Image (cartoon, rainbow, N blue to C red):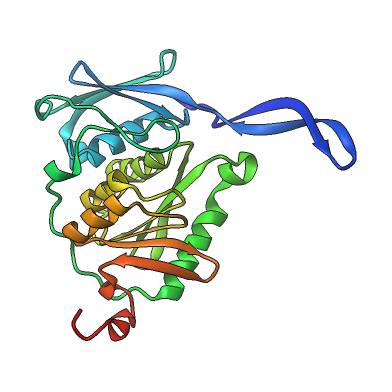
Length: 266
């Protein structure tokens, strides 16, 4: 299903020169319903493009699948905005929907105290200037945002290269689209660095941990609950990565030269 992600809208704009008729591009948003083994599990408010990538990434982010080989079949229904996925194994337990904070009604099927992400891999120290450069590159690559605004971006850095950038009206969905891309392309995200323009809430941190990314960095804020669980999961959480500076809330030892700045009893 190839659908546009931006819609054209005509309206009136007021400026210092008075009223003028203008035409703008606005982000499209649709309810995408995901079915697994014939059971409805979630409806995501999302951008309409690449629905299969989003659906598979969502399931991986919830810990339901680790590989595309766990997907026996799939079907995209463009008329009703739904994706049917049949797995090679049963649905893992009863579905418990938890609505999260943030725009477009974020949704998770799990709670952090029940999550058991695998230990994160060790990676070479990350240079601060590289982290800032990757964030700038991701933002330059965000073509939907430049055209219509109101769109979040997420990116995956592997072996020093920004490998993929995904965009969606929802910050959760953008991260899920990155994970879906790794599944469909058979790319192992473990050991990567996850970038996002959206706030890092606890479910965003969990998506990064389940992806095996030891570092997750946002252009904006992080919540206190995300910081708490990032500390427990061994995740390096970076916030306010913009304007030549950033904050590190947890596990700063993964960033180059940060260890020498830590207190002696750290």
